[in-house]
Amino acid sequence: MSYGAQSRLLLLCPGQGGQHAGMFDLARTSPVARALLDGLQGVMPPAARGALAGGGSNAAGVDIYANGNAQPLIVAATLGMWEAIREFAPPPALVAGYSIGELSAYGVAGAFDAATAAGLAAQRAQLMDACLARHPGQALVALSGLASKRLEELATAHAFHISIETGDDASIAGGSAQAAMALEAAVVAAGGRCTRLPVEVASHTPYMQDAVRPFADVLRQVDFGRMAAPVLAGVSAAAVGGKEQAVELLSRQLAEKIRWLACMDACGEAGITYALELGPGSALAKMLQARHPHINTRSVADFRTLDGIRKWLERAAE
Image (tube, rainbow, N blue to C red):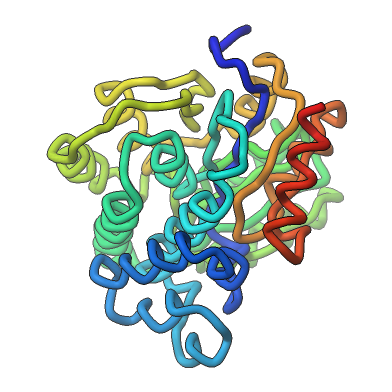
């Protein structure tokens, strides 16, 4: 499969879970990225602005895991890092984002500027929080150690829905927080593992259905720039290069299962030879490296300096 790009670089944009107080620090060593991040204060929820300023002390008292803060902060961190390295990074052949990271991916690809993407993330979080208010007590859990079919059977038996397919023996599931302990007990009894995630909404499940159409309406009103690279759609693992598809798939993924396993395989089929996760965190890099060891994969979280990232990209491109 070919996407018509000269570069074989994949850029990965993470979802929730890997955020931390220092997630802007490396990007802020770049003057252009620092200016971009400072310019995002106006589109951030008030409670998230201290974290955006960078540094653990500035982030004191900010709940960076609260959905309304987490989504725009993760998009800001990802796009801030891209701004910090884009001067020396080769153009990507493909961009893929996990959950809220799919919105970041469109920013990396050039469909949205950073302010638009972060603003959309804040609106997305508000719509999802409204679903949570209508159906309180939601949870996401990571399931692993059993065949995916068996994990889905156990989840369904406890009224959970598979939210993200992450491996042949690993998935994320969303459902009622009250049923989470019973699901964990059932999975462990069957020989698997179950871990509660620091996410308070059952993303990518029918719990979020009421947010789909309103978010599509929001996306339709936004200017959509020419994309420099295709973005993989989480719900289909198909490459997207235009607004109409992007609006449909970005809104559908709020309430539909993310096929991340298929997305990783699509990256392999696309002839990707090296990949960089833009952070925060390194979960996507680890998953892709385990799934496709022939793809040279790193995360910006592995590096102490931007120059370290530059040197790795140069070596990986050889």
